[in-house]
Image 1 (cartoon, rainbow, N blue to C red):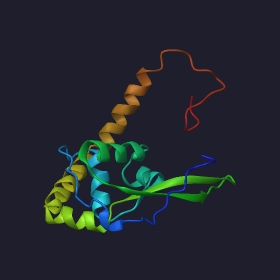
Image 2 (cartoon, rainbow, N blue to C red):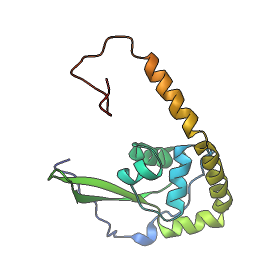
Image 3 (cartoon, helix red, strand yellow):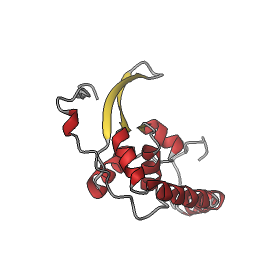
Image 4 (cartoon, one colour):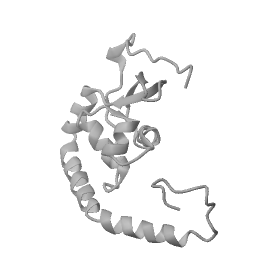
Length: 157
């Protein structure tokens, strides 16, 4: 984004901020719950970090969902970063204010976090089966003859 708006983190009335925690997601075996755990554990998330840590390319959508559906006030800041191909890209970093985190833990967030971590660990045990199922599904999706000039991501036709 060439003309990304710069967000000012110097607020004129920081004492008027709403640090009330939102509600925790009901479903604990989801990417949304996993992102919420990372935020509650004081992590600052960017889209690239979410790809490797939370296995999603849609961090902005998850943040929007947490704010809209669950009522969390998530802070963000736009940052410029240099890329390997010689551009400057603007990315967003997301985090929860420490006051919000403290209030969430007072309301019992630690038990919920432990449940989410256990559920996500159980789900990860199925990753090998899911990968083989996905490969089988993709094999059956190839109904037409592929263009010989094109290949998939790994160089296979």
